[in-house]
Image 1 (cartoon, rainbow, N blue to C red):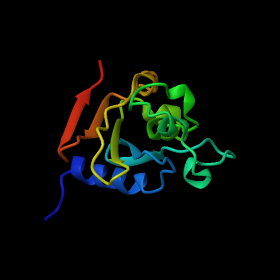
Image 2: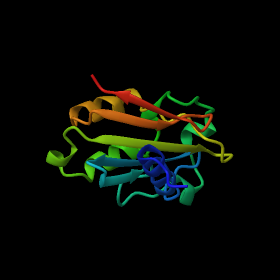
Image 3: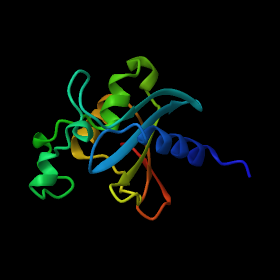
Length: 144
């Protein structure tokens, strides 16, 4: 059966997440406009820095820091941030970002953007966020 567009792009975000280099969670993001992919991104260390999966060290994991807290201790750039940085600014206006993530154990992670990514998405003039939820369903949010 042919997937609808949201399912199609979420599936691509899932594949993009397979490149992630975070020990705790793997996220992928795909920015789309007019059903054409503009950019992709996954979470991992900035270019030129070592990834935690290569060093075997995750400070937040070692300190048992819950998801969504103390991001300043993490070296990784979020998937949404990488997708935005890699996209042409003029193409992002009125686009949609698709986000999918997995926990360390392979189950779906909640894929709603953190506060910083939310601000970056708004600043990039992306108007819709489509996220994969923990139960595997898809959530669409219009940005005000």
